[in-house]
Picture: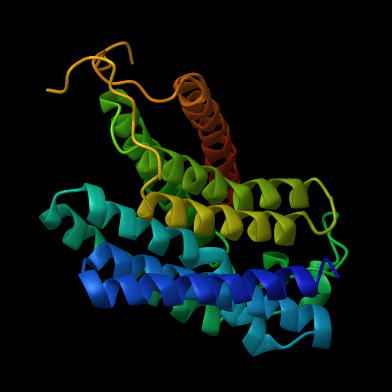
Length: 237
Length: 47
């Protein structure tokens, strides 16, 4: 169940979430929504590949898709949406060009890499979950921390920064809460990866599952004003 | 953080919880980033 139902559910939630985000993009525009939608599709692809491996076993193409979209690109592309939301447009565009070029390079490296699934049963991994250890060719796995560093800094950092600004001004409580949920959700897969390294079975998939739920709830919270009005004991500005 | 707008307040429970949550998330992120940097340096060393 941990290796099949959990990632499948994560994948379905991700695609539903992506649908909501794309729908909002069509209604309101905003490049950040487009990038978040793309990021959620990547999340869904990663989850589906994990489900496929858990259900049907090794497949080189599925592994390459999982590593590219699920392990390398998802956080960075979600974070890029936040960059578009918070940074100056010229910086956001420049960073997007760098991210697109980096993503193409990562795709080239992954799709030309040699794989050995037997290596996934190593370093405390049982082989029941997908792991980057299956990549034999050098210079591929080294890309992952850089993309994830950028993704964490931008996605979590952006959400925390937004929540702090709303809290400091005491405005838009729903957005402050939504951003906190998004930040916590974005940390979850990283936690999962960490616990997975500590040989806790299913930790990565569980982290991704909790992560997508919290990010989705955060998105819904941030885009839905609270019913009650914010108390204003003193006179308004 | 002390520069809050005193004319507006969130409900008390959020006034207490939001700063705690922000500090907690910030601390966890810094720790995770340090771990990620350590992993990146190790991978660069073995690449």
